[in-house]
Length: 329
Ligand SMILES: NC(=O)c1ccc[n+]([C@@H]2O[C@H](COP(=O)([O-])OP(=O)(O)OC[C@H]3O[C@@H](n4cnc5c(N)ncnc54)[C@H](O)[C@@H]3O)[C@@H](O)[C@H]2O)c1
Image 1 (cartoon, rainbow, N blue to C red):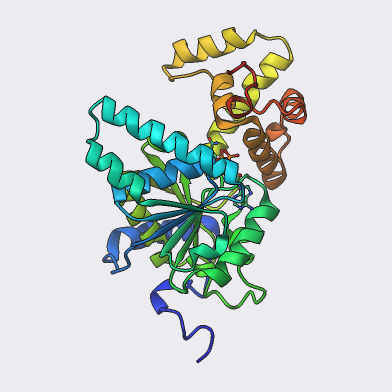
Image 2 (image 1 turned 60 degrees about the vertical axis):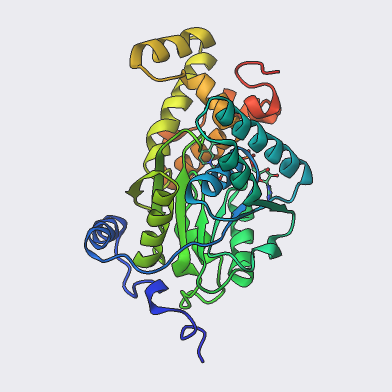
């Protein structure tokens, strides 16, 4: 049996990938006209127990009601993540949003491990490790070996090329057996609250993989938007230059941090100002996305603010490190 013959044809990439816009239009047509396939995610793996991974694992366990294996290479992150999950579930019970039975069933579906090899029996994996291209590529190369040959391999990247991440699954670019199953499910922060998910296909991604990703996110109660694999996709192509400009305003003395946040919060009806939002997202993540936009689109208008880089150099990463543009206990 050839390596390709082992894989269901429904998960193979189209042999003739077109330009991003043509592909997006064609995927949109297929999404609306092709009947759903029988692919079902019965078990999920999530990699990275940070703010995004934990949220994805929790919502999948609660809303999609699937068992979740949560992997992190740091036991401290796993302990912290589970403690946070307990806190969120207890809060929902106390507010009568869910019953104690639902909270217990959700918690029982979460299993944690430090071993990536424990993902050998999942139908889908969602990776949420830091926004470092080489780290994601290294993980996807391993996932292609570890996960079952039908498993959807999704990344929560904010801005890195899905095509490039998919490329890391194989040394033979003509073998799309694993790369056709790579897709991006870009959840918004905080995952339990934000409804939107951006779904992005790489050049190798099969339409069936895209559909399966959309179906699972919908099962998690999310509303999907499909965008093309260009740096920043849709959400961060629009959001990050806004945050970066706010930081440049702080850097160049156009306004104080409170004034910058207050005018945007009270003037555009958003729940928080851009500097608070940057702290919430993580300044390292913001810098990584701006760098991807700057390099990937080759336009100086995406140059990261010098102050943003300095804050990251200082380890002032926002809420998660206790200090960013504001101080946190
Ligand atoms: N923070 C946001 O608002 C936001 C929003 C959407 C998407 N994202 C994206 O989600 C991803 C994760 O972001 P985050 O904010 O949750 O980061 P985070 O720093 O909060 O968490 C990352 C986790 O990954 C773990 N990790 C690091 N290396 C690992 C490895 N080799 N194997 C397993 N686990 C490893 C870390 O221990 C940590 O727990 C990034 O790609 C980011 O761009 C972030």
